[in-house]
Length: 338
Image 1 (cartoon, rainbow, N blue to C red):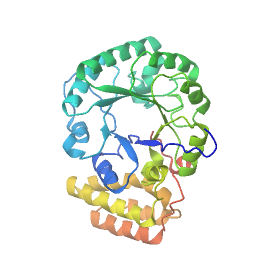
Image 2 (image 1 turned 120 degrees about the vertical axis):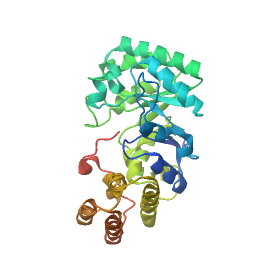
Image 3 (image 1 turned 45 degrees about the vertical axis):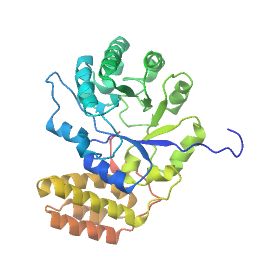
């Protein structure tokens, strides 16, 4: 890049966070904050039964997602299950489906799904042949989310070779192995090695929690056009807007966002307990923006009714000023989501 040249804005994709980025969250975020090119739904796990569960269906029905640019994600080790699900999703109007080869959960890996599919290159190649044949029949494009391997990164060069044999719409790389889960630093040297060797467009995912971290990544990898943000964007809902050159989070915006989510959940979810469970989980992320709020947060987590919760949340925002410069900190939260 020559002196004075301007980089094109990064395209930001919102990672699927189980229990967090549900349809309600996506709609409210889309309405209040700009900057996200695509949202990914938490994975669907198709079986041979020939139907999605009601819980899964609620997340992908177009009428529940409004104008959200959504990409459904499938978690499967069987091409015939992918074929059925891709056909159903195409009938709903989806043109792109994501295949999850990155989930490191032990229960997933033990079934050779997610990162578990990366343990045997022959089986992976066979799965991808079936998946892309199914995608062609269903009329959908396929993106893939991957890790560097299951046990270690020795298989990574072979995985790159395998991915180059298929017409991936995009390859989302989380540069850790499955066994690492979310421990240790992402292997950006392995990511850099693959950049010039991959045929598909590449999206980077992993430990980009703040704007300075994103800017440092851009300086190190100026050719990368797309990043996937998850935990950092859940904590700071304006992070994608900032990445595109927009305004940082205004202190009042986090409370407005919280209140809009609460109102939408209260209108759509039965029972105070179910609404509170959804809202309390969000505080694993929101609390990053409100330093020194341990005591009022403890009070909020003990609430049992919506009335108690509303009062505790209002008190928390009143007592703990929002600090937009702060970002999500995995070590402080103990969080293990992608």
